[in-house]
Length: 314
Ligand code: NAD
Ligand code: UDP
Ligand code: UDP
Image 1 (cartoon, rainbow, N blue to C red):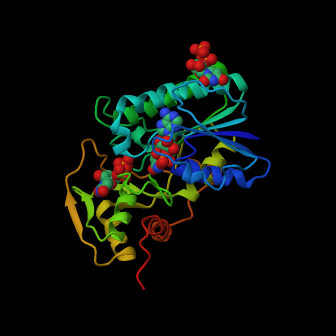
Image 2: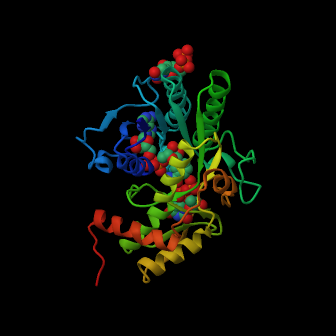
Image 3: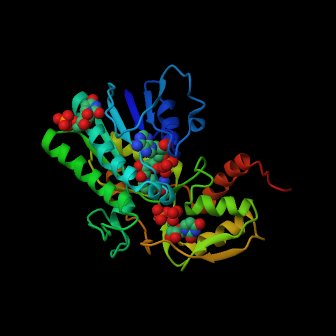
């Protein structure tokens, strides 16, 4: 199987590549523009005969011959997707269009990594796939969440109109090693702050919730979805729900009991609650997450300590 992974130099993409490369029958091509990703995440595969890395922006056409396309290319952290919102929406719309054109030309199956953000600030809790969402179309997050909603629409239109085989994963907050240290997402922020002895910055009110999935569980879910028989959309995430204050308390207890917790200002349109209903993933993919937050955080801490050169004090 020849597999294209767009955004494969990023956090989730590089872990997906590791898993796909374990199968000796797979050849993997990564296309990435390195906006938020890095070659360092793929260093163990560079030069491998079954691996190829292309510097490519998915808003431009791409000609390769593949059987599967995992389409991940898109910045995922709010600070990066808000940095150049026009580019973010182009990546979601033109990038997905190009990957669908490619899938159509070569007859490949394509999986889109959509997001729980398509539910916006949800009025239904927990969120299941039949909920249409509560999204601000003109807000500062819209380039990302409306962009992903258009990407989902394009996937289904190519499926209905051209018979393309599609899969849509709605990913909920994912964490683990290789996240950008300063990428602004909450788990990476808290872990880096705890290691650096800086206050954990809980954005007000701190009662907003998220549900955090460890990256190995996520990759397992994505591969099951790709190789299964269902188009989705299917939620992939961990239903364990925490307030941001609870997350901060957990990080404090596990990583640095002396660290302070500071309440800081929030950003506009921050969803107040988020928790996946994963009944569909359980039933249709036989998938559910295995790694609990309290087990995943120390694995991420080890990686951050190595990269920050701050070994644990004995
Ligand atoms: P990431 O930012 O680490 O990775 C994204 C990758 O895409 C990077 O390597 C980046 O350089 C690349 N990229 C961005 N724009 C591109 C473009 N125009 N052309 C080519 N490459 C481009 O993010 P991640 O956390 O690994 O997220 C991967 C995917 O999963 C994204 O589609 C994201 O929307 C989705 N997702 C992630 C989460 C999460 O919690 N991590 C949650 C929901 C959805
Ligand atoms: N495309 C691509 N690689 C391919 C085939 C198509 O990047 O191998 C792009 C193509 O440039 C176009 C988009 O995918 O912008 C949609 O292609 P499609 O054939 O569906 O539409 P059309 O080219 O007819 O507008
Ligand atoms: N958040 C926080 N402190 C931080 C970064 C984020 O309290 O240093 C909060 C943020 O307000 C949001 C939640 O953590 O309620 C998740 O934010 P993140 O950017 O990680 O992901 P999102 O789910 O919003 O895309």
